Length: 405
Image (cartoon, rainbow, N blue to C red; front, side, top):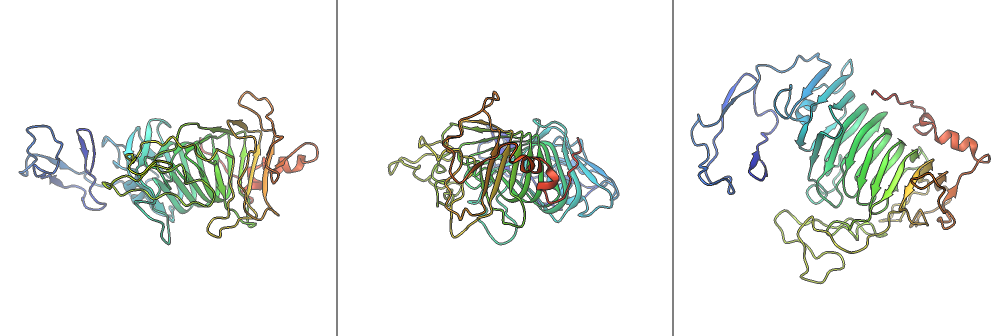
């Protein structure tokens, strides 16, 4: 049950309702403690009734519709995902009508699936989730708002995904191979976008608080907008594949304060802060005196680690000497002059490369103070490298993505 103001939405567990049935709902008077005066609940089998659809869509359909207002085949994204087969003979499309879908979306081991929204800004999928609610454990991460796990040939098109909480709170996780994300707004906190396996992203907007893109690659970003308070990425690829490559993208450092308890999370060597349990007393904000606690979601004035393009600290023994991040023809706004860092790893095979980075108006930026472990690509000396890294097929290990508009 989720309550906003005077609206309570009740989500039964999956498979609790059957098609072609009439149900009654009973609610005791004390369940909704903030209900308007005079609300005494539903105590009979006639106060609130509803009837389910007569039958599900045919198992062979190639398109199903999700509509929050009940006009589609399903009311939630998750139920539609549970309905479609894991490996259909033909590509199946889940079409999401405009609306707000407050739910955790999770699926794995699927293929040949398109999830498409009616309007990029009017289809809002999100939930408040993070590692405080769902701590790290073996197997799939469950701290994300939306997870496409261990899946192949998935297309995510034309909608918004948000994680409403902070800390290690991913908006979107995509793992598997040959997956595409097109015209999607992604918003989270730490690790806002988590990528594992070959992913092509085009015309997306990605907003996070720091370590905004976390992943092992390969990932190709085309005409994407990125906004972050702290470091834009923490790259973890090995020598088995490429890392993160950005072509014609825009990086904007945000100046707003970090959320409560988050400002220290992106300092070198620090793990993400613990998030108080729901209902627990909030912790002291970073840099605050004892007793100066703030409620969750309140911001701290402490200045966070700057929004460098990437950081590579040797944290908990993690070392990524082959980490790769390449920027080609990208616009940078508010990025510190050093550009990259801190870098604590073995740098013998590190690729932190830029070519033709400019300000938002297209003017060359000052690169004289760039981190010594980074490199500026130039022409004609690096023309072949620039051409290779501008090609998604080269970056993504031989896969040529085809984006369905």
